[in-house]
Image (tube, rainbow, N blue to C red; front, side, top):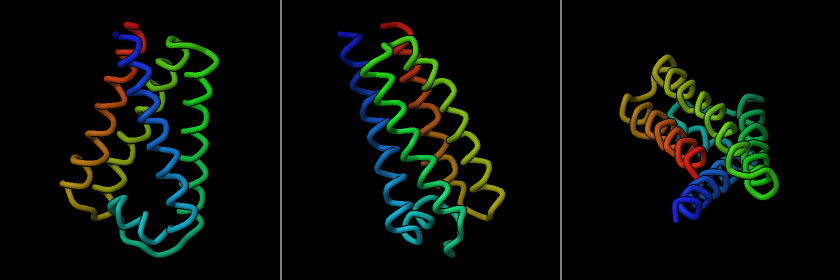
Length: 120
């Protein structure tokens, strides 16, 4: 049961970040607004899209081919990103609600996913 929950949560998170990356590639202005920073097309939005899309693919590949320990380490390392995003939003004049309600909360869920993968 724990393994199913661990894999399911990790897969949902990986698919979610893959979709966010796709949105940054296809709808950069809307994605930037959802991220919590002022919009305005820049290369940063494309870079973020490629980064997020790639991380989703890597996470899914680890789940499919490397198992829970590798996926857990990936999730642990990947949690740095939403913690960093929290700081970026706060330093860029974004709202605390977005910084903590979206990015910080995501980091916590990713850490929970890592813990579940290690426990499975």
